[in-house]
Image: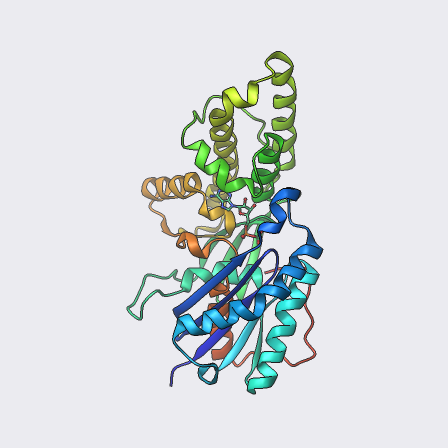
Length: 339
Ligand code: KG4
């Protein structure tokens, strides 16, 4: 018997729905919210209003594109948290209503676990190479930078994490300082390809153990711009590509340094990359280069599954369905949750 799961994601500013059958993706539709661009960041109240407008057409489209009907769906999985409460509430309420109306089980999904389990999404029913347990995952997004040991689908231990800003925040906040649009990460990635990564040296944190810190880099970047503009008012325009390349290199060096240490300390050489920042081309290349040199086996998700998407919610829902891990109608969204 095949198992078909509808996944719903609404934790921040993307409304997404996806259908997965037996671990194979049938559809994954994402509606982005342009309304935030002019504010330079996500405005929670506007995000939840946009989710309310998007949710029904997005789910409808995912079901249509999957070529199935509502009655084929065995369970609905939704993001319970972490995220913006008002945004989560829209997806949670919709999923509850959908489960009740169609008399199917409801499955809550932790958004961070889902980023990691995106490494198990299959594009076809042919066997693909998925990570073997245990593996080490570098989870890097707008809200998280964590090193996690994954022992099984739902057995995960954080062994290092940021003590202040996340890697994605470092990209976005520094990008804002030099006038780039939100989210800055993809723009920095694009311009970095045209610049010299060794042009400018920014401060790197000296944090013990496997934890990360990015707030010092943000300050170092800000002061560098402030001081340079005093000498050359056109400093940003004149050095935009070098600034992006040097910033990106510093963030990657920080991330990779702790990852190497985690490999040394755990002895695990099977590595996964997940989260929005894993779309970064420099980080992908750095990981592949290290893997070649150090004999690591790496798993990098396709770019479309790196930023927020419902395919990762549906695959997590699929594994929970196999465990009969369902929740009742009294489930409530949670703004804060660990893996
Ligand atoms: O995982 P995600 O979509 O949302 C969270 O759950 O946080 O991650 C969003 C973050 C943003 O900070 C964005 O700038 C960053 O991922 N990002 C990138 C790239 N694409 C997205 N950062 C660097 N390079 C990219 N290509």
